[in-house]
Amino acid sequence: MYFLLSLMRSKHWHCLQEQGKVVVVFNVGTEDISVKEDSLPVNDGKYHLVRFNRNGGNATLQIDDLPIRERYPPGRQLTIFNSQATIKLGGMDLDRPFQGQMSGLYYNGLKVLQLMAEGEASLRLDGNVRLVGEVPSVLSTESSGTTKPHGRGHSTTTMATTTSRRNRLSTTREGGSVRSDR
Image 1 (cartoon, one colour):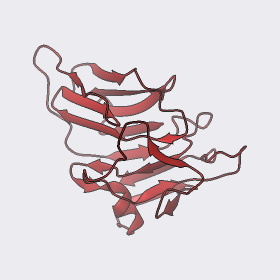
Image 2 (cartoon, helix red, strand yellow):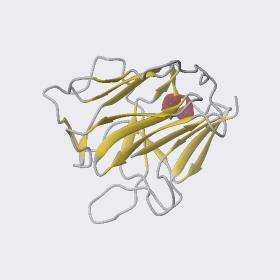
Image 3 (tube, helix red, strand yellow):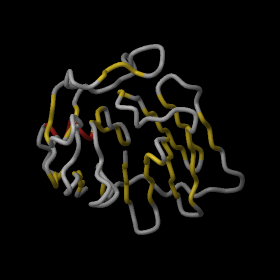
Image 4 (tube, helix red, strand yellow):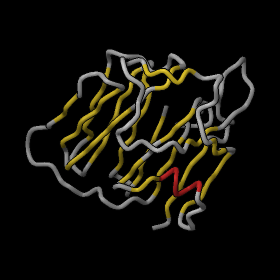
């Protein structure tokens, strides 16, 4: 799993899978700030719900129905981070493509994947990515938590890439990205 939001050269955030655990790293102008959920691996082939919220330098991360991880760094933090230049979804690089599905991506209240599916003119799709209306039955839709993810404003629009590789869904080497020209 990898997500990169690049605002300017030095202001960014990304959500990635590091040894199966979700880590979010962001920078609002002073230093990299990270929050990690290390009690649950997400590379198990199951559907997982990742919620990340940031306000200035303060952040929360929740995976499925686990307790919320909070990060409140000491000292004064800048709040520069409210205009997106590029949103990239997919692998970090060509050798490490994202494998799986993404759904319900929101940024500043915008449903990014839904806008992409509707052909929003300011968005551009790179790579072999396709829209699927529902999670395919070959994947487990069960959350690792005690309840299925629903009722919290989640979009059912899913962007996925598929190639056959030993019964796994995966991206092609090109990965996929969504860019906003706004």
